[in-house]
Amino acid sequence: MTAARQTRTVRAIDGLKGVGALGIVVFHMSAALAYSPEFGFTAGWFGKYFLLLDLFFVLSGYGVALGYADTFRERVTARDYGRFLWGRFVRLYPLYLFVLLVLGAQEIVHLAAMTAGWYDPGHIPFQKPTANWWNYLTSLAMVQSWGFHNKLVWNIPAWYVSALICAYFVFPFLAWTAARLPVRYRAAAVIAVAGCATVALHIAFQARLFPGPNDMSPLRAVVEFGLGYGIALLKPGPAWRRWLQLPLVVVVFWGLHHGWRDWQILIAMTALLWALLDDVGVAAAFLGSRAMVWLGSISYGIFLVHQPILSWFDALGRSPLAPHLWILWSQHFSWNIALRFVVIVVAGWAAHRYVATPAQRWLQGTAGR
Image (cartoon, rainbow, N blue to C red; front, side, top):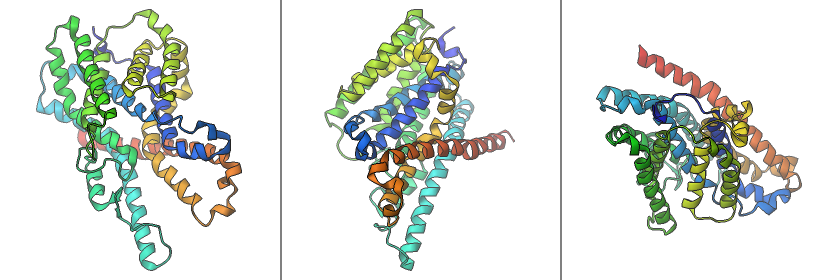
């Protein structure tokens, strides 16, 4: 039995998702951290944290392989393909759409207020390069990262979801193709091909070979998703890999904060993922704790809501209310940072609990009927 046929949840991987989501929040909050007197020393520390999105591509490939590799082992039928894509859509789109609608409503309020002369939002609604009608429509269709324009629009981190959709389109055919390979070499072959493609792509990124709005995000998602799929094909063990967890945590942390090349950091993160798969070891015990698994369960909510919340905090700091709110003053900015984290986590939980989960149940029930 290959690892791709296992369905047991690795609790440490769930916890890793939670840590990764908070890391992305830190990446987008790095300017605020540097502004705080107590955290000013962190300036420039978090520039590589965007690579946590690459880790999420790998984690997605691993997770989907565990659940669906066998479905497409023999053939790819239209029925199974449609069911697979519908399942992915149900999981991703409701909360994605909700946040996008909130941002659209915000622009409508800005437009109405500006037209009525109540206040000046500081920009013309629906006419910013990062927030106009065209890229709102592409965002609704989840194609904003497909090269039509700069992918960083509206809910900025949502480009990841747009790119991930491409990996979902490709996955059934990847699974079918991999199943044609000899079992003995299947995992090694998939990891070698996807790993080499990933390294080559990141070298090309850093060499700036993809100028302009098209940075090949869909291809980035596909090859890293394939890397996660290859890891899922590996046999269990060896037992000694648990001892690699803490050294790899140190290596990943060091690489992220000391300017290692992107592909080197990604290799270290992928190795850490592999070391956690037995769900035993010091790092696995921490990541598999109840609190960390809970954080991982709401990681998608945290990921989608954090950028709008951070922008609202920043807008409040520029508003006329700023001089009157002590939590916005520089000498108290550490409390501001803490409040941001609390609000983001609570909002991520609420979005997961009251938006994503009910919508998923309704859509699944609709499909069943």
